[in-house]
Length: 118
View 1 (spheres, helix red, strand yellow):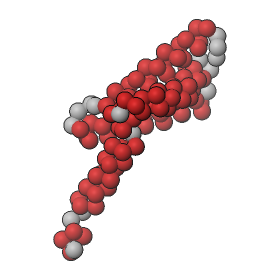
View 2: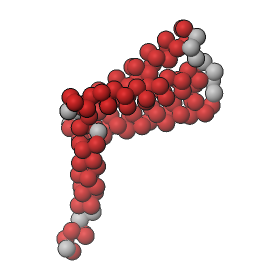
View 3: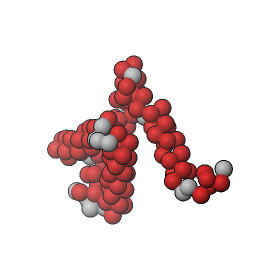
């Protein structure tokens, strides 16, 4: 027990493994199981519908709160990609999911701007 307490890396590894297990059980299951893809599509759609107006408000209206939220969302996405790279050693499923969400959000914002919906 004394060796465990003296090693500062052991608790960090346990936290990392717990985080990886949570990601595998609660996030990646939606990517692996094709029967859960409709739920994943709905979740991604809700995220896109939140991000697109934020992008429009930040770029078109120059609202400081929307700009701050865009920075926060960008930082969260960057953290997700870093976590994914640390987890698997390369850019994998979580990174691809983040890219898809951002591409759909940008496309939705452009279409909403062009059509005058928002």
